Length: 198
Image (tube, rainbow, N blue to C red; front, side, top):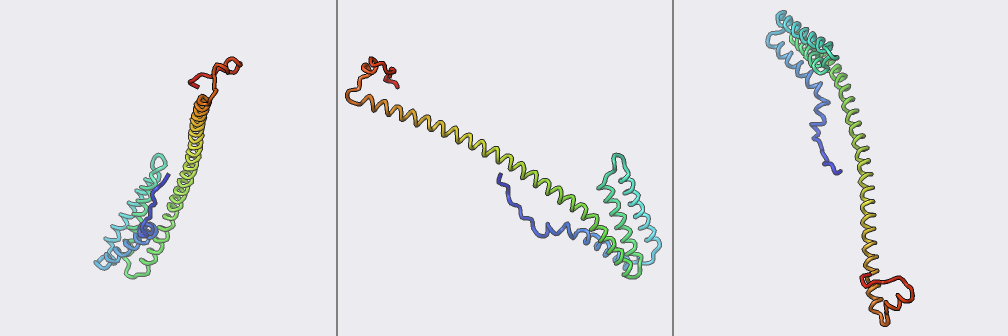
């Protein structure tokens, strides 16, 4: 019934919210580093990135259309890789900052849009689990309260029976000790028989 309280660090709470921006920013920075090291206007490097991005997109399409409805996580990973490669290729090939920044903004917005869907699903699942746990806790609490009342009633019945037996024994002992008490006279008068053990 008593669950431990878990306080998560603010970094752990903020990490999922900043992960899409960190990922796209990292790809942009790596692309610009690549640009500074000779990838600017290099058709060979651009062709390599086009082939890699197309390959990742094709793998994502095959994963999404696979048997049994496809693997959503694999498809999402493949499409994210394709987008990252395309962004890195543009950031590496372009000579200015305007196109890479524009693509970075679009990629970041798309990443947050996709992540928001998973965050909503996760929040919904967490809320459903919390509600089910509360209902089960309430049901179990009710059963525990009923059983506690039943056990308390049984204890009280046992106590009252013991108290009655003790009072009866005290009354019999007291009556037997009174002067002039004669069990034979009571028996002749037709009263119920009282044995000494009562």
